[in-house]
Length: 169
Image 1 (tube, rainbow, N blue to C red):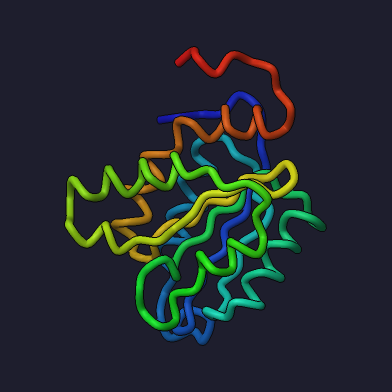
Image 2: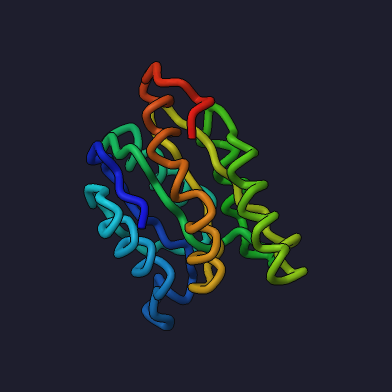
C-alpha cells in the first residue's frame, strides 16, 4: 500500500445524475474515499452531484479555492455519452493540464479493455491543488487510481513548491 508522509487533504466528487437522485449507490466514490484514507490522506469533502457542467465547475472551484483541498478526485462523466461532460468542466477550472497522468491511466486500462480508449478523463492543477478525473465504474476507478496513487504525493509536493528531485523513484 502507498502511504503518504505528509497529510494532504482530499475530497471526492461523484458526478452522476442517477446517484444525485438516490437511484444508484455510489460505489466508486466510496471506494476512492476509503482507499485514500487507508493511504494516509486527510478527508475533507464528499458529494454526489448531477452531470451539469456549471455545477461541476462551481463545485471544483468551491473545493479548491474556498476549502483549499489539495487533492480532488472526481468519478464519473469521463466517457462519450451525451451527459459525460467532466472533461469540458475541467477545461474551465484547471490552470495546467497534467496529461501524463491521464495517459498512464488510459494505457494501463487498455491492457484490460479496448473500451479504455473511450475515456476522456483529465488531470490538472488549479492553484496548489491537483484534480484527477476517474471513470464512474467501481472497477475502472479502482484500476485507474492504482496507476496514479504512487505519484500523487510527489505531484502535490511539487505543485506546492517543493524542491525535491523529480528524477528519484
